[in-house]
Each structure stands twice: as C-alpha cells, then as structure tokens.
Image (tube, rainbow, N blue to C red; front, top):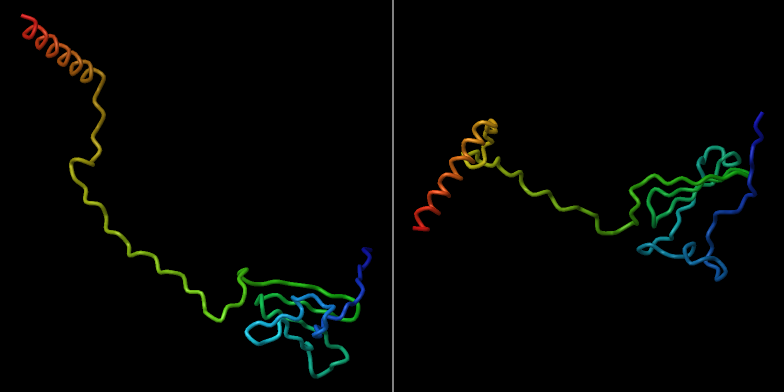
Length: 133
C-alpha cells in the first residue's frame, strides 16, 4: 500500500509585514494580490482555505489541515484592466485567375525533345554559315 505524503501546513495569509515577499503584499489595481476565503461557510471546521491570485487569474492554492495543493488553469497572461483583443485576420483573398501562362502542360516525350534540340542545332549552324561567308 502506498504511503500518503503530507507536507507541513504553512498559512496562506498575506499580512502587510515588511518580512513578507513583495508578491504577497503587492496590489493589483487597488486590490490585494490574493483573495482568501473558505471553501464552505456551512461547516467552517471542515472547510479548506482557498487563495486565488488576482494578478494571475486561474492560479489557486488550497490547504486543508496538513496538506495543500496548487493549480493553474489559464492562458498564461497576467491580469490587465484593458481586455486583450487580437487583430482580426485579413479578408479572404479571391482565387488567382487561371490562364494559359500558369496552367500546367504535359511534359514532351523524349522523341519530341530530341527533334526540338536537333532543329535548334540546325538553325544555329545555318546562322553561323550565313554569318561566316
């Protein structure tokens, strides 16, 4: 049977004391960096303590007796008073008009390539013969 690992309980409360790290005392637009509450008001003796970050929405820490856990569910963006709205993509382009200059043609056969090469050589020899006399 696996053993249950427990960790010592450290209070998640942030009091404005100079010995605490600045991330615990910092404010976000006039609000404290962390919102603290109990998970249940009906039976507070069995409720867990919940700390939710106001700087990183989606970051939560929960503690009950001697165990605690942290979870982050979000997009990896800090809180901003101005909402993030990405640019809209450009309008969809129309299809390129198909014409004879971009239409694929069938590859010539080897015999046709040889005939073309031979005709070009003969034309070049004829040009050299006329220019050399």
